[in-house]
Image (cartoon, rainbow, N blue to C red; front, side):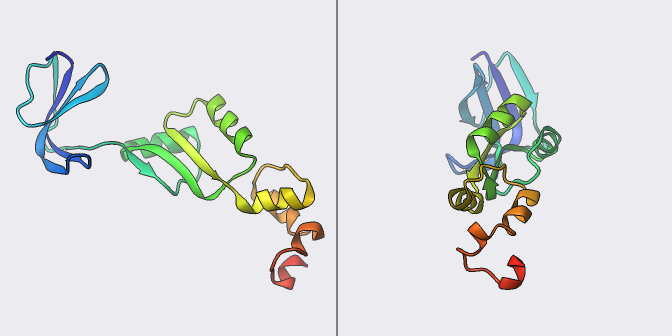
Length: 153
């Protein structure tokens, strides 16, 4: 068969519904087979007592950075997504992430609040707590949203 077999671990495979002790065969860096008794590989990794699972996706990631990626990788996370607050402007955020050399897959939603602030004020600031604080004092935006007057000052 060639390639690599991860053998004897608890295989959790959502695609096939498998949740049992078994093997995962890889060929050219891709999963070639999932099952039991997969042999004949050039290299075999004994995974007895371990869980073999696809990478986990964190849909609510905060602190997206290389150190945070490394910590999440220890937990089996392969993709981090900031889908709560989001980011703005989106394109520049993606450029910065790529330039950092992120070690996990990453993504984010658009920050609707900053999109609205930008549409109403012409601002193109990066989404941050400091920028949001400044925006909360900008009447061009604040007076056009339903907000507690005490917050607006």
